[in-house]
Amino acid sequence: MSAILDYYIENGELKKINTFTDKNKGKVIYEVLKVIKGAPLFLEEHLKRFEGSFKMLNISSVYSCEDIKEFIKELIKVNSVESGNIK
Image (cartoon, rainbow, N blue to C red; front, top):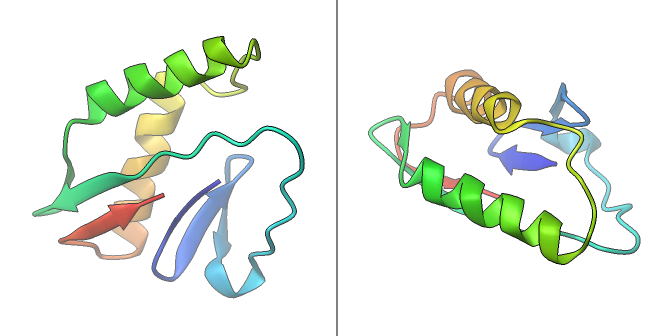
């Protein structure tokens, strides 16, 4: 799940933030990346760390790094973000 402002993405689907419920159980991987001038900072480093977290937990991500990049771009666009954080 990625969230920022009015919309978030859960299981690859764009949703309104007012529908969010924290129903996570078990293992959670948490990452925050900063957005400046509409661009995610240090995206490749965040994705490497994200992959490393999955490996440490001995689980695999349903989404590729390219999928995640697209989710991030979509969140920035639909939320009209110039600066902020994506969790």
